[in-house]
Amino acid sequence: MQRRFTTQEALELILNNANPCDSDGEDINLQPNSDSDSELSSDDETAPHLEKRARLESEPTETAKEGTVWHEEHVGTILRFTPMEPYAADGEPTAKARRRIRSRLQSFLCFITVGMLRPIQEWTIQHARQTEQTDWFMILHELMAFISVIILRGVTKVPSLRDSWSACLGNPLITGIMSRNRFQDIMRHLRFDDMFTRSERVQTDKFAAISDVWGSFVTNCITCYNPGRHITIDEQLFPSKTRCCFLQYIATKPDKFGIKFWVACDLKTKYICNVLPYLGKDPSRPSEERLSESVVMKLMEPFMDKGRAVTTDNFFTSLTLARRLLSRKTTILGTVNKIRREIPQSTRKMDHKEFTTQVFSTTGATLTVYAPKRKKTVYILSSMHSVVETEETIKRKPNTITQYNTTKCGVDVMDQMVREYSVRTGTRRWPVAVFYNMIDMAALNAHLLYQACTGVQERRVDFLVQLARELANSHVSEKKALKEQLRQQQPPTPGPGKRAKCQINHCCKSNRATVRCVHCHKYTCGKCRREIPWQCCEV
Image (cartoon, rainbow, N blue to C red):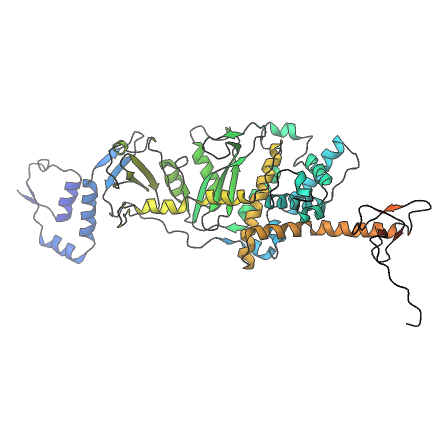
């Protein structure tokens, strides 16, 4: 007897590769009955859904070397997965930062806090007393003035340290803040940790000489700003040739030697959200986990589960990383190396036609293969695009390529901005080089936060100069008050048979003087003295 099947049952048999001969000797009749017709007419969404399933199953598939099954799609086709709801807000300072920031100095102290400066002051004094003078001392305001001199030297570049205090090339702000000998004295003893316990801590932490201060700085960067939807992750090579076990050589960089940092930046503002130093092989990292995946997961950990999107280059991007991020409600967009085992073999041919696009999809990710030239192919892996469309131009670029070109430049632009007024200078100690990079990053973030919290738009160079003034203001005021006190304590005359140096030097060159001014209490020679004519009492 002939058996009747509904349209839905027949489609399911076809999709499951059913054989009409395997029906217990009964013929299969694909004619729909009246009940099935009524069901399809009452539910308009069932038929398109079944047609989509049949179309998707009929498209060619390919299995990569590591076992990933890729489905080749047509450009403009709605793909297999639905993208998550993106993070809607723009980057903005946190409520904590908005309450604190009213000036440039307060903005800078959000990153280089007083709690960080006090240990630096303590360890610097400790080193100076152990190596040279037992009564060596430095107050906190003097350390802040020392940092202001470093910032000013980054703004006004001169050939050498001596030229910053010279009469021709020197900056008057620097000479008014601190003498050159005192600056060199502080720089010689500058330390960031306890010198007596360092040997023990170095056994487990290569960054022990500055790790406490650096950790506080990174925590402040994370807690002071909420980044927007797009975050860019890339490497930064801070130029340095100091001797340390994690110094890197990268031939493609302008400065080939340096200390490498992994940086996560907000795309729109170029705010440094998170940063990690590269210290070589990490024994705590699982052997089966790639370094690139570990770096991205650590940098993005404070910003997960919100619908943000991260942009990476081909060093970081992988299908495994895309799925791990997707499980934390975070998407990825980045170039991927074609030699990875999860890439389909058919895409590796070199004779792609110019301006052609291939689209492959798998669980939670899309692969776009675009040929900008005949013998060049770009691979873009995305977990944020549900449709890959091409532009109506000659090059017919896919939307994944266009968006990657827009979002890939966050860290590179940040590094360019930092280098423009970098405080970096020659040093033989790598902790000092890291401290220079920390000041550069803190100054950049402070400028961005100051503008966002106060609404004042200011050039970065003007912000740095005014910041240096505010950092040194307390020290300069204390120094002026001390000088005034010493002048008032000096005797009206040097003493019988003695002469002092002229303290005015307005019209002379270190002439000798025997009397002092009644107003400023400075010893004054005859050339620098202004004579007042005598007047009688009747006037």
